[in-house]
Image (cartoon, rainbow, N blue to C red; front, side):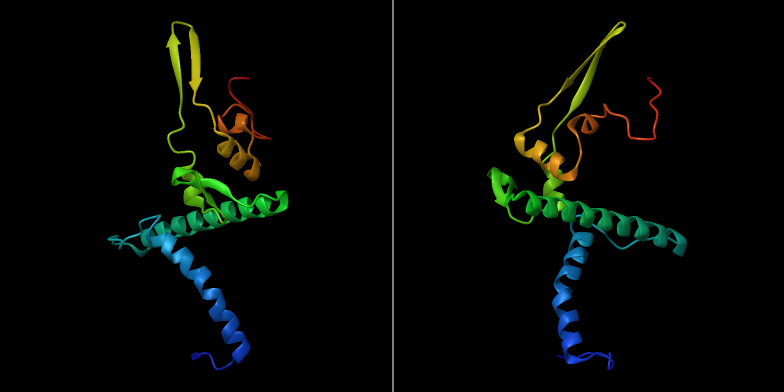
Length: 154
């Protein structure tokens, strides 16, 4: 193996090389999932700002994946059926986790003073994903108040 860093031992070079595919995976997500493209901003501050937002989104993706995978391991869950045709995912990615919630909707019908809310039902897999992430279904639907926040309705 070749390196431009003369201070690294052969073992350290190999260790750094073995980490590279994980790093490359994030660059792939940056280009494909987030569809990053050349930026045509005139001010460098704007480029820096948008790149920071991309960085944050990649970090959030990594945190979601890590949380789901660690909880799956902790709870003895080997796979999640989140691929098309409910095929199993051994190492679910954030994009597939979020895709599992695609098309879920909630809407309200108002008739005078009365409001009726309708929601789609969550599947067992969707509820399992919420549990893995530590999110209650009430919080998912926006019904519970986050600790420290006050609702204007109450």
